[in-house]
Amino acid sequence: MAKIKYLSTGNEACGEGAIRAGCRFYAGYPITPQNELTAYMSRRMEEEKGIFIQSESELSAVNMVMGASAAGARAMTSSSSPGISLKQEGISYLAGMELPAVIINVMRGGPGLGNISPAQGDYFQSTKGGGHGDYRLMVYAPSTVQEMFEMTYRAFGKADKYRMTVMILADGMLGQMMEPLEFDEDIKPEGETRKPWAMTGAEGREAGSVKSLFLGEGVLEDINDRLQAKYRKIEAAECEYEEYRTEDAEVVITGYGTVGRIARSAVDMLRSEGVKAGLLRPVTLWPFPYERLRELKGKGARFLAVEMSAGQMVEDVRLAVQDDPKVSFLGRTGGGIPSEGEIVEKAREKFTSKKEK
Amino acid sequence: MSTTFKKPVSMRDNVMHYCPGCGHGLIHRLVCEVIDELGLREKTIAIAPVGCAVLAYDYWDFDTMEAPHGRTPAVATGVKRVLPDRFVFTYQGDGDLAAIGTSEIIHAGNRGENISVVFVNNGVYGMTGGQMAPTTLIGQATATSQYKRRPEKEGFPLKILEMMALLDGVVYLERTSVHSPKDVLNTKKAVKRSFETQIGNKGFSMVEVLSPCPTYWGLSPVESMKRIETEVVKEYPLGVIKG
Ligand code: SF4
Image 1 (cartoon, protein in one colour):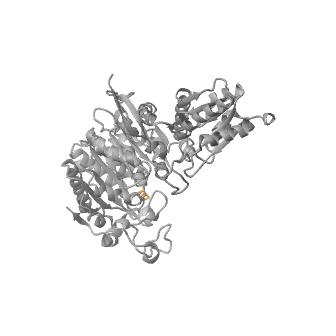
Image 2 (cartoon, rainbow over the protein chains, first blue to last red; image 1 turned 90 degrees about the vertical axis):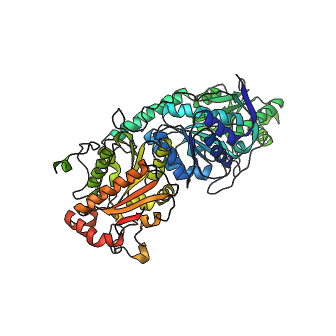
Image 3 (tube, each protein chain N blue to C red; image 1 turned 60 degrees about the vertical axis):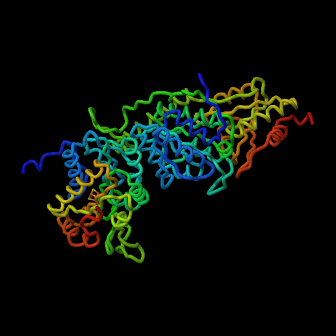
């Protein structure tokens, strides 16, 4: 099969991944550092006879996606941290209405307006439910431009399969860096694209309704039970992670996205010093690889959670390991990116036995 | 004219939850009659608001969906862009459209979205217990303007149609009422014209219907109709505003 190969930014790779997945509706609002994606969609949607709308607000963008999705289209919006906060209302409604959608968050520094540098401060918001009510998003954490493409592409199939929002949680570094991108020339949309539940006019069938208001006694609880059952199914089936040199690891570094890349080199540096280090990089942040971490702990590993945040994913690492002294944390915020050196030093300080010194 | 009392095909049999004398039931019915007359039932996707009319889908026998409070025109935009050959309208109250959703309605109009909007203005928030709306009249007491709306503290009644008239993307705007049989007929005519505007691919249109909320006006159904005739239409003049 012929391959298409070129250099792409991560933002544009997400855009192309969406197009190749059959996304034909995109609404977005300008915000740095994801602007290349919106601009890319403005060009590509026209070429593919899809719909591009620059909305008046982030709220409007996510609600346009809601309408497009209810009408049966594969639909996407994207933004960066402050804009994603604004979309939370819509995200909660999408969950309540069980509508598929793909949302890309190219994270920047926070809280507030923060800055436009890469950060990972939106982990809680993405994985624990940033809006109201009991719901989950599937969250993918790419760490290369190639993965920005692939995960966005795959997200649409998952969103339709489970009728829910799938989020791509990237950061400003991944969004704006250039790397080689490669995919099959005639790659086709994945998964079921027919949507018998869509609101398309009640021709030849009963009239339908897409809604999230359920006032009857017990009805909402039943719906929540059904949602939770769906989430349990996803936890069992969809958890993905990547491991590097963990076979005999005594120190397992956990890190996702940009941190996952850096931690990989740190593992090699530690190994060259004789420290048995390995990396566990969650590819899905929800569902989170609790079980695999527990297994690694069972084999005697200790953990160093590294993040571009003040410590968010580390809480899930602790939850998995259930043994606090075995988990250490290294975090940078506000655009600070932990270097290989910092990671190595932290690992040495925490895990090299005092006696050896 | 026995046909006047026949239930429109587009209307379900369910007993309505609206208070006695509320305008919503009547306006729902007019909308359904027009949908029947234009043969739109199987092509329609209606977007319900958040407010007293949130349960409109219990009464309408065509495809419907909800929207978050005020985002109704943005949701309608998404539906209509994906299905340009279907008929899409929003049904919104004054809290939904004139307060929390002002941005969405203005920009949908400004983009000239080919949708129809039925805007029911009764000057209060009904569902949440009769709070002040941007459309509440000066001197009107509500749960949240207990000293009666004062311009210096609570601002002025918001005239959405007159604002929207300035937008190039908007092709037809009319304000009607339901306080007399003649006005009910006019409302139906205006709704029909709005729906035909969309079918003809002419662009954005909206009908504002002045409607009674006896419960939170603290008046009987009959007194409420009288109030529209004597007070409300003075602030919100009836007629074609644009188009
Ligand atoms: S509160 Fe007012 S608007 Fe709501 S149903 Fe009752 S009369 Fe109608």
